[in-house]
Image (cartoon, rainbow, N blue to C red):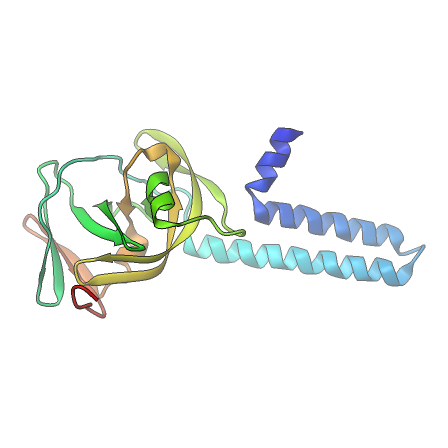
Length: 212
């Protein structure tokens, strides 16, 4: 029973749907005894089911629970801003690493075009003051090292080079050590991105002045 309660506590949408169903059933049972109360409870239950459905659709539209998150960690080369672009040189390990600020806290990120969502470590989330909201959900990410438990959240601001992303969907991944990953949900916000030779070139829609 304790395990069930703990599981439901991590799945607010499922808990909302189950509660709505129970209220609707209770309302149906009371229709013959107290019609007005029965109809009221059934209405409340139906509204709860509709809310759970809409919230589930909204989360499914913005997230995928099957994103592949790379787990590589290595040194990085210096990034630079050139004109309206941020340029990231290829690191010796064959990956692109970005030096970013998460809610003002400096952190390194691996750019992974195979990852649907941006991912941050538990330590990054704690330091940057990022916590899952009441309607965020737990999920399982399939990575190169197997299944990893994660929790959805929102980053208020992620900044690097001349790029700033605000209110960015992310997952907090306790099972990934100190690895942070920039996924396609951030790259898709840009005006464009490409790789030329050994350099990743990121072009924001609204370039930010360094230090702003």
